[in-house]
Structures are given as structure tokens and as C-alpha cells.
Length: 151
Image (cartoon, rainbow, N blue to C red; front, side):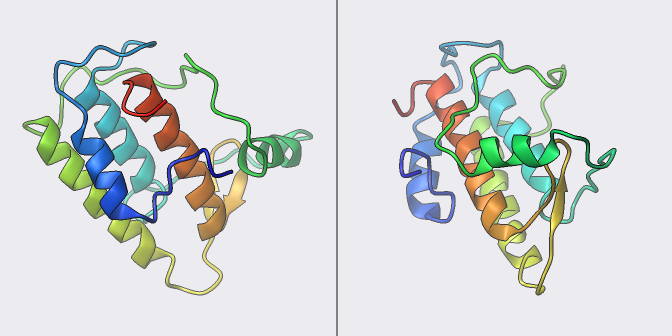
């Protein structure tokens, strides 16, 4: 799974994020760069204790969905639309949003310092730190490709 961004290498991740330009057009989808970063902030906050995720419980496909999404080289498909885009931005500019994302990732690391912590993914159920590292890596890769930052 080396084709995905390693979110634990924060120096490289930060440099990649700084390659985003506020006016960049996506290769697909409707997000603008800052909307994408704020979307990632929101998603990381569900895994670092800031926001509480919800889950309706396992269904017949939960284990297979999790395995396919987390434990294979499968990429997140383009134009997977799961939530409405916010009309207003939270942060004053893209750089501030990127810096906040990096802080949220540091909080994510600290949150998982407690032994045996698992955090709910809305489709895959409880996931541990290493599963979240993989999933966030795939998610970040998806959006960095969306803006042509990586191939």
C-alpha cells in the first residue's frame, strides 16, 4: 500500500499540502482547495476525540467493506459524494486551514496513546490507530490527487 500518502510523515505531508493553491481547480468534483482541507479537518476530528462519530452497528457487509477499504490497495473512487459542501469556510485562508489540519493530526496521535482505543468509522465500525492511519492515508491521497498535487 505504498502508493498512498503516509500521514505519519508530517514533514512530507505538510509540504504536499502547501503545494495547494487557493485558486486551483479540482480535476474532478466540486470542492475548492480550502473546502477540501476543511473536509479533512472535519474527518480527522471524528478520529481524535473532538467529534463523536455515530454508527448504526454492523450489517452483513461491514467486515467485507472494511477489508476492501482498509486492507487492499483499492483507492477511494472519484466523485464519491457523502456529504454536502459547507457554504462558508471556517478558517480565514488555506494556509491557516492546513496548519489546523496538522494540529488535528497531532491530536489524533495523542488520542490513540491510550491503550486499546478504537474509534468508530461510520461504514466500517470500530478501527484502531493503524487502521485509521491506512484509511486517512487513502483519504488524503484521494484528495491530493483530486487537485493534482500527486499523481
